[in-house]
Amino acid sequence: MDTGTQPGERRRRKLLPVVLVAALLAVTVVSLILTNITAPRYNDAQRANNVQDFQTTVSPRAVEDFRLAAYFDLVFALGYGLLALVALTWVVKRSGRWSRVGQVVFIGVFVAALFDEAENLALLRNLSNRDSVSESAIDAMTRIGLGKWICVIPALLVVLASPILVPAWCWRERSRRSG
Image 1 (cartoon, rainbow, N blue to C red):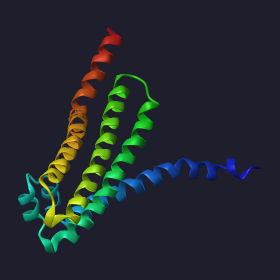
Image 2: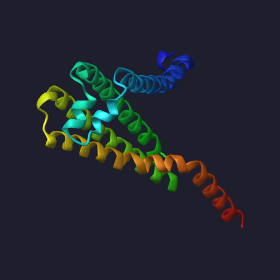
Image 3: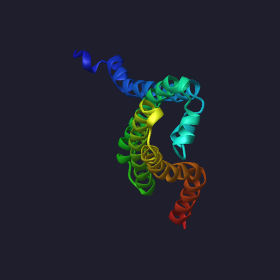
């Protein structure tokens, strides 16, 4: 008998993707937590209005803390981007209206992750030039961050509205089919 077809082997093969996604989710969540523990004002640095705000938020002594937080945030963005791709592959295999909505949501989250990575790289560059960072460099970083939020907010709204929208749609479909 081929060992690849034994019941235990099949179970392990089915379980492996679940374990990998769970591990990716765990790494993603831990990296988010570490980002905020390492530099509690990390998001303030990314959203600085100008050079003075940036330099006030990131004191010379805190540059390395912010740099480490940016590395954790790179891992976080990579993690949620990959999770969005995993979810997208799952949703693509489905059919119907909610499958299309899911595809748009997960593509939006993936694009947001790309913007987030670019924002983190811009922050790392600005940290390296903290004392001589330009207004245009701060502006570029915050505009990239805005792109991230433009992609994420609609996805979050759909996710938050889905407990209301999905049951209502299912009820309407059931009524339409029975009536």
